[in-house]
Length: 167
Image 1: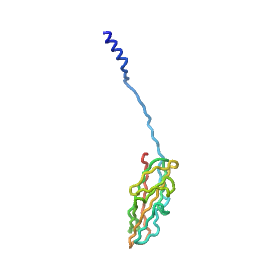
Image 2 (image 1 turned 30 degrees about the vertical axis):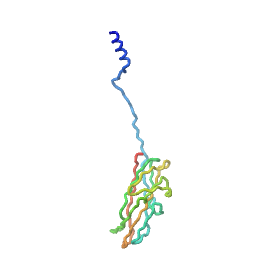
Image 3 (image 1 turned 180 degrees about the vertical axis):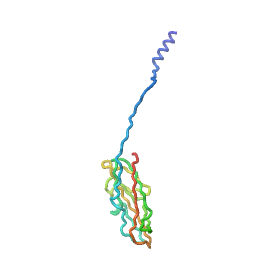
Image 4 (image 1 turned 120 degrees about the horizontal axis):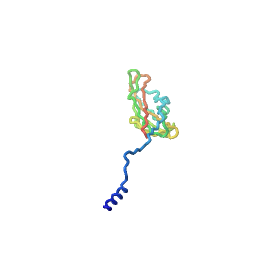
């Protein structure tokens, strides 16, 4: 009987005693990012004078390409998406406009010569400048006036939407 009692005491000393209630804590945190802004009036995509029946293209690095500046949280990733028109309009008249896979470009400083192209139809994902929080986007395209295109100033709106990706 002494052996059983001694064994029970040894087992009781080895088995840890559980508490009936315990508490663990964590912190809840949130990092509020600088709101994104897009400066839309840097430069319009301007084809200038076009002639009936002759397509005219503007490259992203031409002096008359469209240009936006993005401002946000330095070093954060953003996704850029365009809303692209299919036509320019003058009253009831339309003229086709198209965009190739290399008509848009991006760089994290105002230096189009260092920009990387991307397809404006699918958009792009890039990181804002780690120091300034800036990014620049350029856009070219091609208009295709018909041989009997009515004379006039044709216009359409091109929109650039920018969102943080979470990276």
